[in-house]
Image (cartoon, rainbow over all chains, first blue to last red; front, side, top):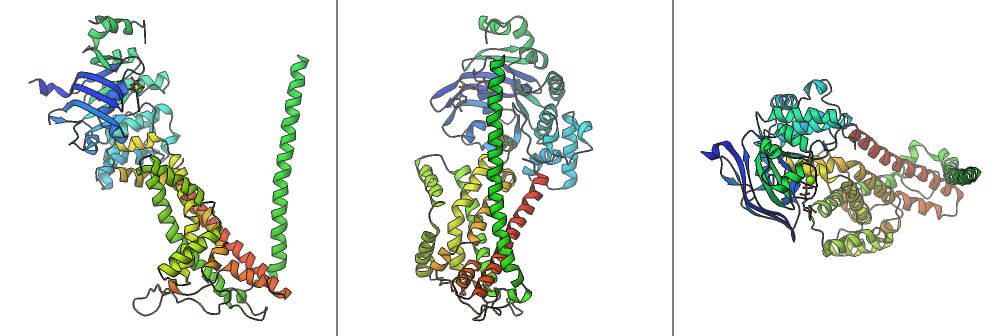
Length: 256
Length: 302
Ligand SMILES: Nc1ncnc2c1ncn2[C@@H]1O[C@H](COP(=O)(O)OP(=O)(O)O)[C@@H](O)[C@H]1O
Ligand SMILES: [Mg+2]
């Protein structure tokens, strides 16, 4: 069955910021334990699309979804009004463009997701914290100073801490919104390696304006333009032999 | 070349002039404050003794003390804090985190800002009508405390809102993205991260309230009182009592005013001594708040 290899699928997805029609009839399948990249020029709707997956738009008034994002294998429509956004965020976590750790200790940052899920036993939380920090390739750097403030870490470390914080919620899908745009090249390549590593455990959706990054880390790529999906295909196909002229122009750097 | 040098020299001259002017202004303030304190201390310090704290007011200046006044002030401030802090913080959180931004919240916002500037005696009149006549709390500690709570409520609300507004939205989004509810986000992030700013507002409010006389006189505090309110704790069941809330009272500034308005010089010395006491109480309050804030900052750096 197709559904078994799919983790989620956007079907005829439309999104409105009040009167602004930001996403137009988007259809994208998200494969299980693969990395799907969203590329396209600034303002084309990548972030908007990504934030539909964990219902972040529900935090602000006048936002409206239409269509469907089906989550497999449960067959739940993520954006349905009958589905509680809190429940969706329990399953689908997000790493933001700028590292945004809480002004608390490293440990407390990672422990927050489990705590929100009602886990109280220190031993279990300790284990989760270690596992998540290892998962985010940060454990060795911070294991001796777990109770120091997260703000004392470098930018790249802070972003990996944010990844660990998301991993600690054991998400089914992990969303990344240009996670390296605020980082230097070394920190960037560390995070790219990490993303490739992580797809063994979790389905990943990543927005990037860096095409090399999309080519390096992703299995599938979606190219968006002006709120529409122009082309979706396997990453190697998109970057070597795109079927749409617009895609080709974009990846060869002729616009965007 | 010389033109640029000249220009820089002129800029530097103004820079230095301003530096000197700023320094002088700061010193003027400091010197004045220092002179006031010294004067108060020289006048009042010799009068401060254990007996001064444990005696009721009296017709004889050397026997008069501030027992009823400092206990009254402490209890009134307790009521003020108990009422204004939770109400002010809750209102601030509601306005920032829950209320939709529309014309109704705009009007509320403008009104709260203006309320902070209303003369304190107006709050006294309001409290007289509301608490004394309508709710029939009497001319009591409860009424006095609530009158002062009304007075500082806008300050606590505004401080809470400012502190909350300083928290970047990315922190809220981080919390929600991990599956936290609105209340969890507020309790685990918004409140802890804004505690420093809220405490500052509370300190400013309480320091203003502790010196207020007008609203307290308006609600009918006594100027001469030779007994204490009912003790809040007792040896018999149920051990705690709230009867003190309804007892008559006086406060430090009223006691001071009472003494200053007497002709005898000895009473003026009593007033200065009470002034030192009042300053000490204010500093103690500020000290406690700074201590709490310091402890918060150790865990959370903002
Ligand atoms: N809160 C908002 N209200 C109204 N329009 C918005 C809002 N956020 C984004 N937009 C608009 O939606 C479009 C897509 O934005 P976005 O998803 O942020 O693009 P991208 O992430 O691809 O740069 C843009 O035209 C942008 O101006
Ligand atoms: Mg974006």
